[in-house]
Every structure is written in structure tokens, then in C-alpha cells.
Image 1 (cartoon, rainbow, N blue to C red):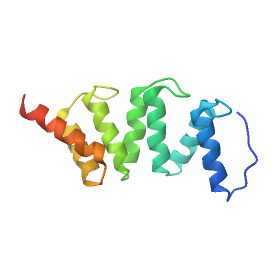
Image 2: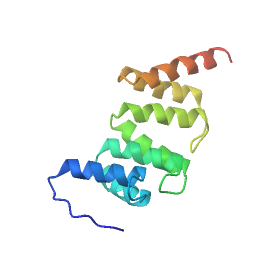
Image 3: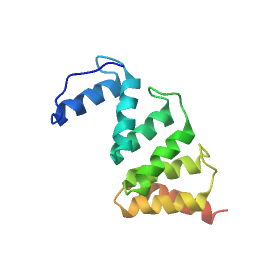
Image 4: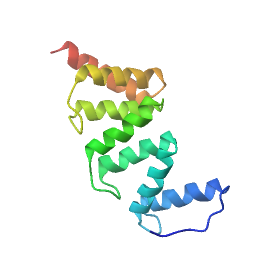
Length: 134
């Protein structure tokens, strides 16, 4: 792992560094970004849990693992990060890392929608039609 000399209170430099690591700008060290995101997630940073879910979903810097993506989306959703609820619902609809269950997915999309996530609202309408047309 590479260590960087960033002062404790210098949040903007940390954000820039994480984005560089995560998206490969300059370094291409996605795995370092995953390590940082996991530490931040374990410390209660829900956005980092959500982003870590993306990394496992896409296999960015880590081996693709839908079960781990579900784990991190669940953690963020359970604690109120509504975009994670939408992504968790999508994983359930696509049978990725968690058993397909349209009713549970609809509940998650509804939670995301009520929290202001437009993708959650869109997916809620789609899943309602699927449930009704069965």
C-alpha cells in the first residue's frame, strides 16, 4: 500500500486522493481506494459503504462479488442512505448476490423514492408493473 502525507484535518485533499485512487487518475491504484473506503465505511461513513458496494458490484479494484456489494449496500440502506436502497433493490431484481424477490425490491425502491431518490421512484414504477402483470 502507498501512504500519503495528508494532515488529519485536510478533508479536501483526502477526497481528491480517494477519487484519484478510485478512478485511476494519475495512479490507477483502485485497490488502495477500496481499502480507504472500507475503513471509512467501518467508521460509519454511509456514502463510502455505498461506493464500496459499487466497487464490488463492478469489480473495480476488488474481485467482483455481488454478495459483498449487497452487504455494503445493505449497511448503507439500513442506516438511511437511500441511494443504496435503490441499488440493493436492483441487486434483488437481478438475482445478484441475493435471491430475487420483487416484493422486497419494491419495498426498497419505495424507501429510496420516499427519501428523494429519483432512480428509486423510476424503479418502483417498473417493479409495480411487473408485479401487477404476473
